[in-house]
Amino acid sequence: MTRINSLGATLSTLITSGARLCNALEITMYQRILLAVDGSHASYLALHQAIVVSKATGAEVEALFVADSSDVTFDMVGADSIAYARQVVEYGRDTLAEVSKKLDAAGVKHSTKLLEKSIVPGQISATIVAEANETNTDLIVLGTHGRRGLKHLVLGSVAEGVVRKTNKPVLMVRSEIDE
Image 1 (tube, rainbow, N blue to C red):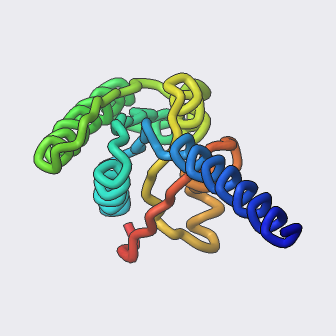
Image 2 (cartoon, one colour):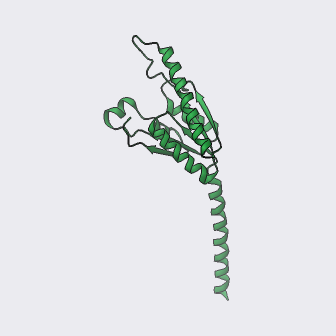
Image 3 (cartoon, rainbow, N blue to C red):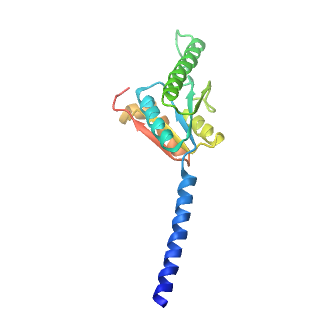
């Protein structure tokens, strides 16, 4: 009889633990995905993954383009840096319009946001993390170019900066194309 009581107590504990595990899994389901895009091949691969995750979880996607031209406008000899900054903003609008069409076609609930400046000039990663925190994002999705060596040192990596600056899950999608 003691053995049956022990088995009953064990089953009761397992059922209770299982229920808690199921509840924990429901809580960790993604509800808000921040998709950072820049119009690159890698960001369109990231868009595809955001669609897959959104369809699996029912999460809403916010597509974000940070139009930070500060890294190029520092000393453009013979060039109009204001006109260039406008072109970057226009490119961002076009990119978000295309992303929005693809999200619509996939039946994913979404919004788009164009930020015309980084919170710190040249720090796109900090801006992405700030937006993720502000919007209670559950998952950040972005493409990475997979640069190595000197290119990585000179150009840096927005994706790497995001991973270093956030405590949120980050899904990085690597492009095989060297852009």
